[in-house]
Image 1: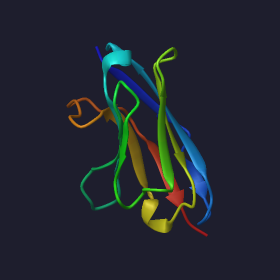
Image 2: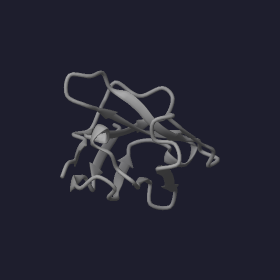
Image 3: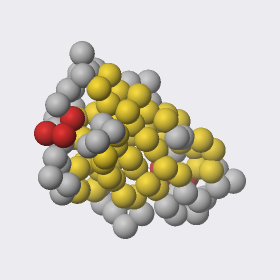
Image 4: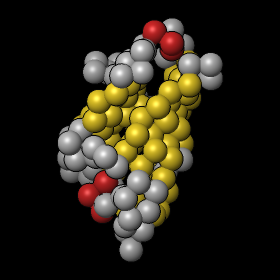
Length: 115
């Protein structure tokens, strides 16, 4: 079955950077679009970025030019490089299938942006 394990979150000051990682298994990873999502306290989960099997990327307007999604098909890993972090980026970040997430969600990784 599908398993998704996110890591790399933490506490960072505004303007700082973090790199999130997601280890995926139980799927044909190389042919699956993948994405990063986030859920802030009291808010609905939202899509942050997605990458197709061919490497085409899309981003939410709120993170465009600050976040970069990438993938390593040899390792079945998805990454989210985040720069110039803002307090409003504070959330639990999850990876999942891009564009049409599965019902299964991993534990996520907490990102807190605060001075």
